Length: 46
Length: 519
Image 1 (spheres, chains in turn brown, purple):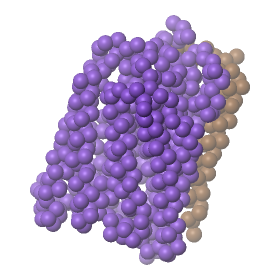
Image 2 (tube, rainbow over the protein chains, first blue to last red; image 1 turned 120 degrees about the vertical axis):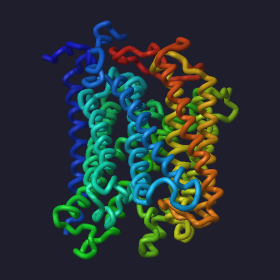
Image 3 (cartoon, rainbow over the protein chains, first blue to last red; image 1 turned 90 degrees about the vertical axis):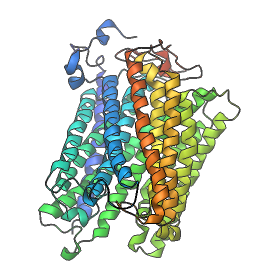
Image 4 (tube, chains in turn brown, yellow; image 1 turned 180 degrees about the vertical axis):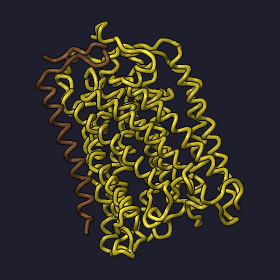
């Protein structure tokens, strides 16, 4: 069950499909960012 | 429609500390940017006051270097970037028909990292030996040998980078997943498009800056020699890594400005944007090209001729999509029913003055000419035309454009026009003479200069103080508009198109609790 926010601080709950899609996009982008950081260090490590 | 439940929110300090609402966070970003604009601006005035006449008058050279370094870091990371993220937070959900950003809790964190990052950066001014003084680029080996302020700066850059990357992830996740039914990518307002592309740039290059300053940190404290020639490292490699971040960063600072201007001009020309598709493709082309031009910042380090030719021609190529954009803005205005309210004045000034910055950029792209211009005031004039009469004018135009929507009140048009004219005159008096100084050979980043440069420096300083003090008008207008004024209609401007204008002014706490249908 998706919890209804008590204070109105957050918008109405999203569908599980939307939550999954957002999570997938965010994780992929975070992986790209971390990958770029690691690549920058490893590329110049000699 | 917003229900009563959805308009509930905490009050007082906890509203702002714990908010996950895109409008509250947008407001926080914009107010933070405004505050930092005055901090960074005060530093610019210290620089200009010292340069009013030759010789050393007001500050010692080391403090002067701290001011140039901090002014740039604050204006780039503390003003232009947070201001654009503020606009994105306020506008993106409303423009695509979403109730909020995709990741509201992370949104809160993205913002609240920033005040701590900048407190850390500013506190380095009180560190032993003073603040960072190696320039905002923190070139090695100077930055490897400077005092502990550089460590403060490195940590604060890491924090700013985390904030930016989190913000960018949020923006992409919102635009890709939260659009209203029927709003396909090629129906999105141009401001949304420019921010989507900018967010990809941020994710690609902020980690590279983080990598560069991490290597700087390990060179300083952990015995590595990435950039130390004595240990087998290469200081020029730092410049390559830095500018691989730095050039896309330039477009991070200008693409959202293109988006803002592309919203404003059609509204006040009362015509749809000319060449929407070509605007999108031009933005994407500029973003792609921004990754293959970085070494034009370092033509004088002694690159092979083939490298210089490649980076010269690649840089010149950027003029093509940029020219497409300028053409489209002018064509949008062509035979339009134009009116010149304050946002439009800022947008038209942007088109004129940004183009001057673009053209001086083309001059700098020519390798043999750059050998002459490099590290002179011509470069300072160029990037201030791009960033001040470019990005800052667009930000101010965007603020006037949406302020009535955000607050529910019309701003004072007379004061707005006074602010515009004083700002634009101040900017040009400040930065245009710097072209002449650079062409005559005055180096950048020096507190003293030869006598023949005096007159143009005096003009520049007078312009800077006019520009600085006229920003008090901006604060007056913003405060007045927040506190009250004539009630703004839902559709504030006659020619405005877009979903945000279908909402009330001010909009409900959660923008579109039910997604609108797009035809």
